[in-house]
Structures are given as structure tokens and as C-alpha cells.
Amino acid sequence: MGVDIGDPVPGWVDVLQLPRQPSLWPPVGRSGFFEVLQHRGHEVRLFPLDAGMRDRGSRVQRCTGPEWAELTRRWPVGARIDARVEYIFPGNREYSVRFGDWREVVEYEGRPPDSGTQVKLMVERQSEWTRSLILRPCDMPGQGN
Image (cartoon, rainbow, N blue to C red; front, top):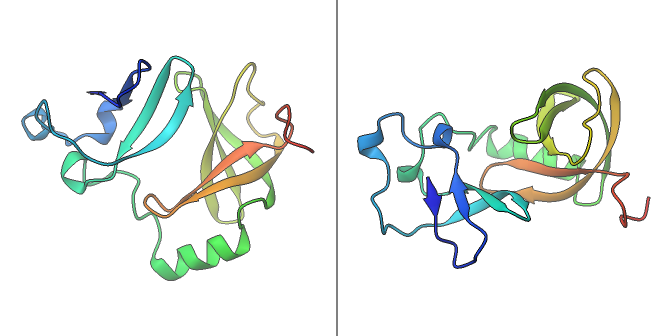
């Protein structure tokens, strides 16, 4: 679903985030709040924060409030994480990682790490809406390793 974000770079919501029945999709002209999942030079991938704009099974509320509080205390913004790569998603240019009992996805450019390898990541942001940690590789240029 295309989203006008007031920028020449198009915004879009993955069809897997939308309600399963197309008749329940937001009508043209509806406005709402979105979280940026990925921002590349040619597109902005969005997550609808309005529950009426997404499938009930979407990745919001992945843990309870107390679990999220513990997770954000344990891994605050700036924390470094050793994680294991589980799966590569070439179409989204992401890979999933596991650290402790938690899983996240990480964007990549160029060649992704191999599945099963250990990677060093940094917590760039914490998303209260989706209760997810936004991670980036520690070896990204200009990040002061």
C-alpha cells in the first residue's frame, strides 16, 4: 500500500501488515501515524501504528509491559549486543538475529553476514510502539567502533 509522506521518496506498507481481507484496508485519503521500519534512498517502509490499519497478527506488542521494561533496561540505546544470525531476507535486505531469548531484524547493505555467524550490533533506538529494538551493525562506517 502506497503512503503519501509528503516527500518525493515513496512510503509504503507491506501487504503482510495490512488486514487479511482487502475490503478492510484503509481507504484512499485516510491519514494515520506510522513508524519507519526502513529508510533507503529510494523508499520508506512503514508500519501502521493505528490498529485499524493493520492485521491483528502484526508484530506489535511482542511482549508484556514488564518484559519490555526489562528488555530496554538490559539493552538501552547505545548498548552493544553479540547476536547470532538466524535467517537472511534478501528481498527486504534484512537478517534476523537472536540474542538471549530475543529476536530482531537488522538491515544490511552490500553482502549480508552468513547465517549462523556471530555479529556485533548496537541498539540505535527502542520502539515503544512495536516493542522492538532497532539495531545496526557496529562496523557501519562513521559509527565510532
